[in-house]
Length: 328
Image: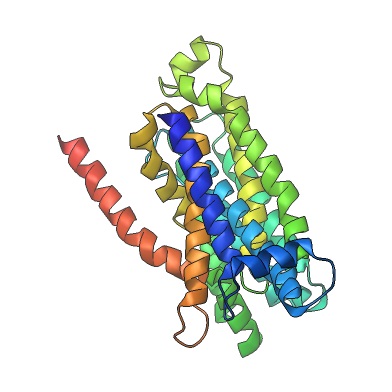
């Protein structure tokens, strides 16, 4: 069952990746795309496919996968169905880092300033959450993450309030909406190492997550180093989600939704959820990115906005579902 699910999700992601190369203001046929990928003479189709749509497609795959994977790992670590990267302040910290780069004009001088600041912000907030919760249980980590997330959000609002110019405020707002428009190979090269490294660290925690499902005390009695596992997952999330946010801006709800879509199909062992959740995350972001290119209502619909429109009702349903199950 699990192997069939993995093959099906991988096939769906591949189909959507091909559709992503075809879709846009100008639609290409599969033959045109194939010729653009295999022929050497430069032409307009080859330029659009190789330099615009292919990097965007790869980023959608990587970003969706790391968001889904980190959400599944955090839900297993915290044993909380509502856990996702934003809960620990990683997404907010990355967004604040990018906002600082935009606010002080670094992004206008150096193109990679905003991504680097975003990645730094993610690592700092994850480290702060870990330090503040040191010696405490899972609840302490959640509370520390919520506090840091609130501080980062306040910093973003402060920057918007005192934006030095309308253009800076527009840049900040656009970044916070999340988008893959106008991304290129430089963004792929910047994000890929951090996303891959973060994903590897999260996958290494699979066995420990299964044991942690029994509780921290029982896990320690069975030889699991809970502190090391927590560090592994937090650092992996900071690297992966920080790299994703660094190039795409704030994209929420994928880390929350993806694990819940696959968990009923693979059972409730956390390790079994990780890879399917990554594939579902990739499918969600790819599909949403294709839709943003097909909806023509003025300016391009931002990726983060579209996913939030879908994810927010799901989040509400999840809260009500958990409440009913707890009451029962």
